[in-house]
Amino acid sequence: MKNFRYLEPESVSEATRLLQEHGWQAKAMAGGQSLILLLREGLIRPDIVVSLLKVPEMGGIQQRRSRVEIGALATHRQIELSPVIKEQFPFVVDAYRALGSVQVRNLGTLGGNLCHNAPGSDPPALLMALDATLAIAGPRKKRTMAVEELGTGFYETSLGEGELLTTISLPTIPSRTGCAYEKYAHRPTDIPFVGVAARVTLARNRKTCKEVRLALTGVAPTTIRAHSAESVLKGQELQAEAIAEAAQVAAGETDPLSDAHASAEYRRKLVPIAIRRVVNLALERARAA
Image (tube, rainbow, N blue to C red):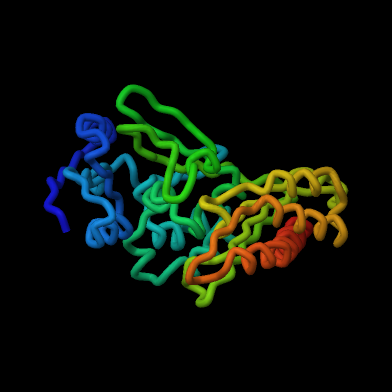
């Protein structure tokens, strides 16, 4: 591992200033779970590592009026055990139980996971389905973005020089809404080669689909929304035929890669099956809500 300077800012403004000052030779570190592996393997060789662990304003999980705000430094384990998350977003807690081991969840942070943007990551799909927004702090200004705007490619994000993800905001789930997530992996705690998150909101008649969000992970260089498949379902009664059509459309929106876990062909064939299962589960929960 190459030697580097280790800096510990105590505020967001100090952290963004340091990152801007040292440019692309500096790397921000949250939990460090992924970054340390990259450093050890020599895949990245920064001169400066800026630790965020002493920035208190980036931690915690807070209930606001119409949303829940999760600090970027909140660990996966904190999210899994949070009473607020369990009450308002129970499907997130269920999904988090299969997000790596307890040791992984104790160390890894939500913000670090999103900014690492590894293919097949679980949290981005969950957050896309929930219509989450991200607060970004920079050396000169702050901005917000949708989760789907963060990942731009294979381990790449849209964050600019000196920018940090500080907060993830989850809006309250509307009435008559059901959410579901399923992952397909060799072992339950592995990174999925296909993961699908769905949120379905029904109209007052509890038959017509008022809103739907479909997010897929493991089937493209970054997590994606299946917008065309959503268009097939929105405004329709969610009968088997409509769901099957949307599932096939979703498969056409993917751009999977082949790796040691699964081939691109296998991933593409699995997507329609996964979409049908997850949409039906979300629909069942929406009818019961």
